[in-house]
Every structure is written in C-alpha cells, then in structure tokens.
Image (tube, rainbow, N blue to C red; front, top):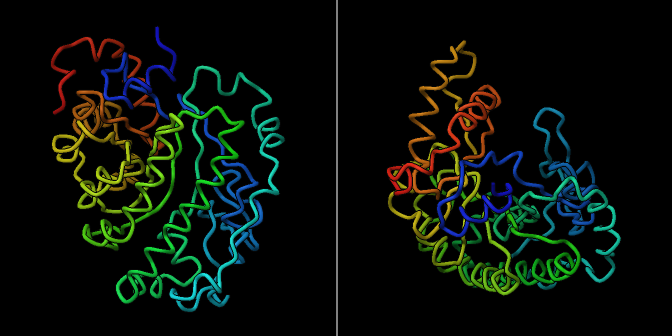
Length: 331
C-alpha cells in the first residue's frame, strides 16, 4: 500500500493514484512565524497576528474569521506604484535562521513521515500590491501603470525565491502552495490578458525555480477564476488549490486537467442550516465530488465539516475506486 505522500505524488504527476486522497490528513504543512507577511506572528496557524508585518503594513487578527486583514485607518505604504523602489523596503532575509526554524518545526518526524510535505506562503504579487496600496488603488494601478506593476510583481517574486532558497536548504518539501487571490464570487479581478501581461513573467520565473528544485508549484487562488486557467497553465502552475464550487469543476477537469491538477476547497453553503440525512449527503458527494475524481486529476480538499465525516467514510468504502477502468479516465 502506498503512503499518503506516494499516493498524492502520483496524482500530482498526472498518474492514476492508488486511492482517493483524504487531503487534510494526507499532508503536513508549515507556515513558519519567521515569514512575517501577515502581522507579528507571520504565517503561524494560518492567521498571523495584530501588528505590523515586515513591510510595515498593519494587520488585525479576527477571532471570528480566524485570520488577519489590513487594519482600516492606517495609511497606504505605497502611494504611487511608479515609486515602489523608493517607498518599499524589502526585508533582510539573511537574518533568518532557517536551520533553527526547521529544528523546531521538524522536531517530531512522526508529524510528517509518510505525508506530503507542504510550505504555505501567503501574499502573492497582486495581494501584496493591494495590501500596501489599498484594494481599489492597487487594482487601478494595474490598469493605469501596468509596466510599474509588472516590475513590482517580479521584485516580489525575486524576494520570495530568495526566501525559498533558505527554506529549501533545510525543509524537505514536496510542494509549495503560494497564495494570490484573483477573484470574487462572480468573476476575477483581472482579465486573462492582464494576467498574461502583468503576472505571467513573474510566475514563470517562480515556476522555473521550483521545478529546478524538484518542488511542485501549487497556486492557491480564491474566487471565480476559471477564465484564468489557460494563463495558470502557461505560467507553469502545476495545481490550482482553493478553487471553490463557484467555478465549474467538471468543465475545468474536462478541458484542462491533463495539464493542471485541481485541488478545490469544497464547501456547500447552499445547505447551511439544513438537516440533511446521511443518504442526502452521500448523494450530494457522489454527484458533486466523486463523479469528478475520475482520472485522478481532481484532489478534493473537504473544507465543509458538515460533510467531512461522510466524505472520509465514503472514501474508506471505495479503496478500489481507481481499479475500475471507467474511473481512470478524466470525465
């Protein structure tokens, strides 16, 4: 029997896995507090904390949302994107002791042995722009000053590559999940043409670096971003995670998943507050999830805890899912 890591690596490499993964239990992720991109605690625990990040932006932690957002009322750090070289001070990454960080994070091998090993890094290029400029101002800058934005995005990627050089010297990673949200409930904030013009050069550099290191590049990008998938593929993204159900999962898998893996965050908000029977939950999961798992390129991450136990039980009942020929072909 393959380990969880071996099974997931087969899927990420576009091979038929041995079984459907249980993503939340099959991976081990790290978000070291040394990465101070979201308040004083950096990435620790997905949240960060209330206070300043290492770019000087102020964040507030919300107990309700279990995350941080830029604090209202604090002035923008970057007032003119054409002046980013003068106004933005990048952190001195040489001061971080990644060896000590790994000795802390990797102290218990039982936490990660046999699991896919992931580093989660927040605040991609577009997120970083609207964090330091303000959301509206950052998006307007992409239209009014595209060349300056493109240069800034590449500088952000250069800094992240420098950071990953230190991390990868000690952390035995299989995959890096880089966050950069591009959409809302109805569409993406940027067009495919904008993605190709402004962001693709930076992401291609990032993808080339990770490929050289033998590490999978997974882009976490919330929102209705299905129109950007061709750009993701061209940029070298190997897997798109978070990808909520506002996107047409079946169509994406059918059209693109011979070239990119889909690792969606599964939630069913339309059933919130409803008392569903176990039979109803199973029918929903069969229709919405298991039917798309065929071919192995769809790796569901069950975020909805009203369905999580049922999903885990259904996977356990189907250990031979990929032994059936009809389940080895993309839908």
